[in-house]
Structures are given as structure tokens and as C-alpha cells.
Image 1 (cartoon, rainbow, N blue to C red):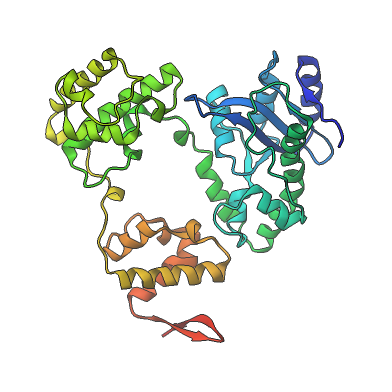
Image 2 (tube, rainbow, N blue to C red):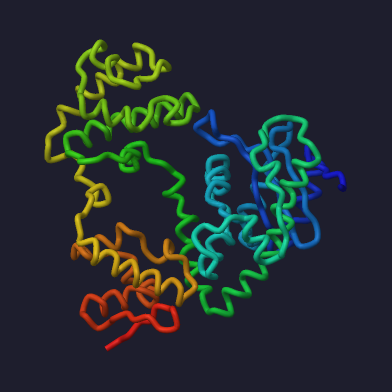
Length: 383
């Protein structure tokens, strides 16, 4: 096994980055940890062209500016696999999303490889190789790293740069380049990385939501988000979602009452609890007309199961015929909304999703489609 070098000094990094800026395409990956922090801790950055590669150690005393310049250089296409977390790290550290980018996991969903295909699955599919997962769950913040760990980290980009032309060729042959590009626009939208504390409550699951409870939850979630950023703690390490929901529902008015709530974490001191009580008091004074509306996705829409199964059958059929992952086309919530008559603004009735699935949904609802079985396969019949 060849020894893998890791860049830990500014001079070597500058020489490497000067080679990188001459390339048109680079494969990029990161290793990080985030179990105990709000912000991910960047531990390694791996970069590869089709002729050279290297690992950079951000935890050493090294200036990362040359790397940030590469990420923002619009002449270089940056290739990731499942790059959303990588992009989040770079956005948090630089305030910018790398541009332009390509994500092979997104592209793979247009190639009949299923939902969220893993990197090792992609390597096996396109290169016929098997990746050892032995180092996958390493503590990447520990130093020194073993040569085996470094080999594993570097293989991510060395294989990725080889996969890129193969998967883009397949996308081009199926005339789906524009479709992939539209999906890539979503993960390069700064809004999904620039978290607004006032909107965090919308991601918390709550059953049988009432507007008064959502109003309190909104303010409590905002407080938690701000505190987690200050303390650099994961949200659920400070206080879990379900505990925030319980507090919002029970509306305690004193320290004794709030401490009686099951699951209140010991990390919260009396000062924190008093702050929570103050937030509850403030939020309860908000006029009902200003309370949050119940999100559409939180309402469990009751639809006829047989009708839902029929739509799922159509989705499965369209997925198999097109080679696109079902999840990429539509999800169960969207199917329920269709059956509930809430078709406005649904993505399945726009663009390529309409061509693949939406137009057939309309035909099915109009009674112009039926299914039969022929040669042990489901066939669609149009009238």
C-alpha cells in the first residue's frame, strides 16, 4: 500500500492549488465530525483531477484561502457525491456556495439507480470495484491518521473523478441534462444552508397541531437555535424536539412546573428555564391572528387507501419505465394531496415530472388509463 501524503503547510498547499486552478473539473470530498457540535468540524478536504490528487488537513496550522478560491472559481466544475453536507460546511466557513457544482448522487437518480444511491454502490456500478468500509466511521479529528484512513479518504475523490465522465455520458445519452441541472439548482440555493431561527419550528414534527401551540413552539425553537449557535451544541443536545413540543403544549408558568416535565435535560440551568418561561409568557400575548398557520404537511390527509394504492402503482410504473427513482418523482404526501384535490403548486405537474408522471395522473383521474398484467409484467392501457 503506497504511503499517502497529507498537506499541512502553506507552501505545499499553494503549489497544489496552483495546479488545481488549471483544471476544468475537480472531484471534491470532505471528512468531518458533528456529533458534539452545532457546526460540523472540517477534518479533511480531498481534491482530485484525472491526473493528480491530494488530502489537505484543515486542523493543522494552514491557511485555507487557496482552497476557498478554487471553490469559488467559476471556471472549474466541482464534482461531489451527496454533496449537501460538504456544501453546508463550505458555506458556513466562507459564506459562499461553491460554484459551479455537479452531484453524482443526484445524477444517479436519473439513471435508474434508485433513491440516494450510496457512493460505494456507484463505484461498484460504474467501475466494478468494491470499497472497504473499515475506515468509514473513523474519528477524523484524531491525529495522526493511519495510512489506511488516508487511503480510504483519497479513494473517494480518485474514483469520483473517474465516475463523473461515465455518468454524464449516460445522462447525455438519455437527454436528461436539463433535468439534472434543475435538481442541482436546489442544493446550491443558499436558503437551505442559511438557517433562519424564526423558521426552524417548521421542521419539528408535531401531531394534531394547534395554532396556539405552534405559536409557542415557534418562539421556543428560535431561542434554542440561537443558544445552540452560541454554545456550538447540536439542537437535541440542548433540548430535544419532542420536549419543546411538550413544553409548548403544557405551557408551564413556573420553575417547579417546567422541571416536572419528563425529559427536561440537566444541561439547562435555572437561568435557561427562566428564559423559557419568559418566552412562553411573551408568546402567549401574541394576537391569535398572528399565530402560525398549520403547515399543510403536518395535516394527515385521510384518503381512500385503494385510491392511494392505485396512484402508487402508477408512480411505480412510471418510475420503472423512465428509470427515475420514485422519490425523485413524487412522495406519498404529494399523492395524498392529489387525491384531496390540492393539485395547485405541486411539482409533479410541472416540467419533466409532468412529462414522466403528472400527465398520466390526470389521465388516471379522468378514467383514461387502466392496468393489466402481460408476461408477468404490469402494462398500462390508455383509452
